[in-house]
Length: 318
Image 1: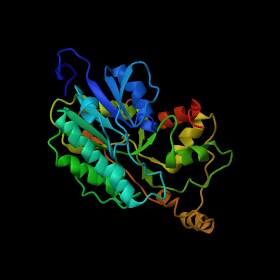
Image 2: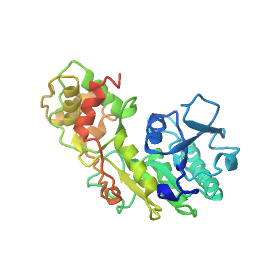
Image 3: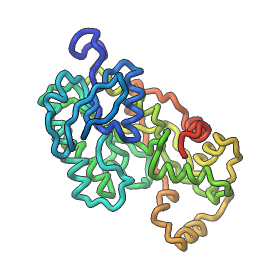
Image 4: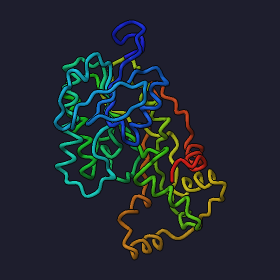
């Protein structure tokens, strides 16, 4: 779907965006127009938007209306809306309704509207649990371990049954201004004034800078050949938890402030506080290989340690 080959010659591509009020959606709303895209934001209800963005109200994606008009003349869709992993206590049926069924129905509407490419923001959790014993690639059999991951994988498989040209971006843990969830917990740890007993954690984890995600979406949108596949999106260099904290504290102008505690003792301490389960991912690795995306000429513009330093140095996350 090259820029000059989407409808009228020379016309800027028109992209329909869902989830524009979310963490990632807000950033795409700001950055994609800088890259030459026109945006039509699909909304549940009327919302104030930047002057360079059009909108269409479609209601709840689980039961949308006005879809043919909302998708008229649209070249591509970026679908970011859905229930997030951080929404605890949600029944599996809800994940299936909003992340799977709503996505598939939306894709079918896009197919009827002759949209040229459907970009679905999936998750690395469609492929793995919170830790993995090997470096993950798209060639490995997906083995999600929770309702969120299963709902994302089921949506991907539903896309594969349509006639659309689609791409499911399996995102590593995303960081950037306004970050939430597990990454926000690490930010709070980095901001704390205390030394932290994390120097002994050797597991590595893949992250994804928001700017690198925007670059990936751009490459996927303009890829000339059909895709019809999942693609891992992750910064190329994984980091230990200690290295993440050190990078963020560098952004604050501070020393790393890390010290060594044997892993069994650290695990026992967390277990005693009742927090062992929520920190289980700290004790393993989750590394994802973005080589397939790099073969589409994706070149990350943010180096992970520098991005984490800038995240706190700019006071972007409170």
